[in-house]
Figure 1 (cartoon, rainbow, N blue to C red):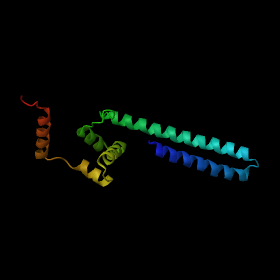
Figure 2 (figure 1 turned 180 degrees about the vertical axis):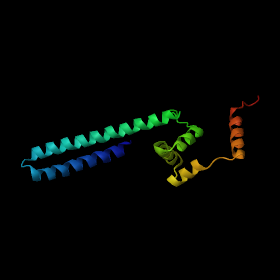
Figure 3 (figure 1 turned 120 degrees about the vertical axis):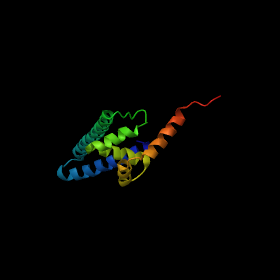
Figure 4 (figure 1 turned 30 degrees about the vertical axis):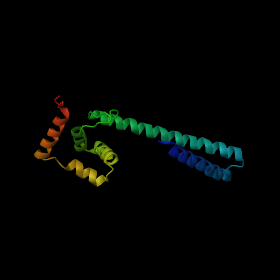
Length: 139
């Protein structure tokens, strides 16, 4: 997350704390008590959101590792993505998310890409391109 986004979220948290403290003043007679309660409530909410976000990231990485996908290296085998897509459920949603972010396309386009099976000619062309990259030039 970049600094600009962090500043926006911090500003939103301060604004929400101020509004909550104003509402709590109506129910309590003292300002310090209302501010203290509002700060405590917002700290709990922010802590819960951070914990939930990190938990989701950890679960996402575990699901990727089940299909031999290593996100740290950045290269993903298309066969593993297809296998993950066709397993269905949350794994399919993860593949669609990966494709939408990497290809900058819509959800429908990502589904269409994964459902389309390459023809034998396309597979041969991909294999030839792969072999070209593997060969060493003659000197």
